Length: 288
Ligand SMILES: Cc1cc2nc3c(=O)[nH]c(=O)nc-3n(C[C@H](O)[C@H](O)[C@H](O)COP(=O)(O)OP(=O)(O)OC[C@H]3O[C@@H](n4cnc5c(N)ncnc54)[C@H](O)[C@@H]3O)c2cc1C
Image (cartoon, rainbow, N blue to C red):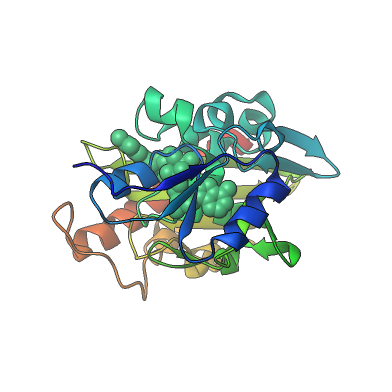
């Protein structure tokens, strides 16, 4: 299908993009990599009257390491997230997730800012964004806001972004402790989207005790969530197969799972338990 007609605007700076978004409030949409929005426009699931193309704003495409955090510009492509050495070294689960997105064409065009702003329930990044306790930095007419990931994903394709705000960067703290992280997923075969994707970050103290554990799960519910009960059951424990299994059996407790042609709700809830275990084990192997 062909998208409805629209006006196409190319801002020259981030500030210009925010101004255009405000000027055309309610009628306009940002386009970055276009790999979620354009298919939706072709299917007429989205019909913006104005497209503001930020894809050429090189000021938004970077990965920087400073003051105990890694800062990833919103226009950083999935391929860059996958292959940047600092991310591979310090935020392995995020590099894993980026490398699992779609195919190489999608990874070369799609952006991390576009993915999290879109908030598809089956997107890969949200699991790691949550597990790494990231902060999403936005820019709007009122200035900058720093939104914790825990409050960013609100519902299916719904975030805490205001209508006139743009995702500027993602800030992720890097731990100095012995840490390992991993992302594992059961992919929908045709698209690669997650039927269940789990990111685990495990910190070990000098005696081998799990001093901190964070687990983010995507694909299972209408938006990504942290497996709080599993995290609590693992923290302060020495990792054994029994302890990990018993903790991960709680990974989907209380979750209302999606139920669709790809997987039933019960199957997704079970996948969350199994993939949480695999992610924790993989993270531990990388921490040791
Ligand atoms: C064949 C195919 C397979 C795919 N497989 C996967 C997969 O396995 N896993 C996965 O996670 N994803 C998958 N995707 C989606 C892909 O990751 C997209 O690149 C991503 O979801 C959106 O990024 P984008 O830059 O293309 O955003 P766009 O399509 O340009 O925009 C998406 C939405 O985000 C908004 N937006 C974009 N950038 C910003 C910003 N900086 N600030 C505020 N709002 C913004 C837009 O207004 C729009 O509403 C797939 C896509 C395709 C076409």
